[in-house]
Image (cartoon, rainbow, N blue to C red; front, side, top):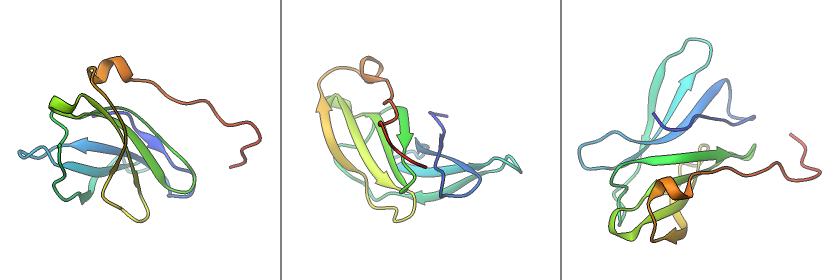
Length: 115
């Protein structure tokens, strides 16, 4: 399991982008924090390049956006974004030739941001 992200307006769940299929497809999953049940929510269409070993750091916003730092194989590390409400196919926001572990991190809360 990768990072789990709490998204304020998305119910009592922890969300994650996770590679759990034989063809390395990225999936949107959630864990119910009351019942502790794990649910596969969406299996994203194949994209190129596909994550080869999964995603590391992840974070979200109250609007449902979920950012993921994923291993892009020969393309290096990719910063991807999807949305837990619309389940859009993740878009590549940036790439780095280095390994995913070198790019693992998080962001700080923006000044003046309200929940």
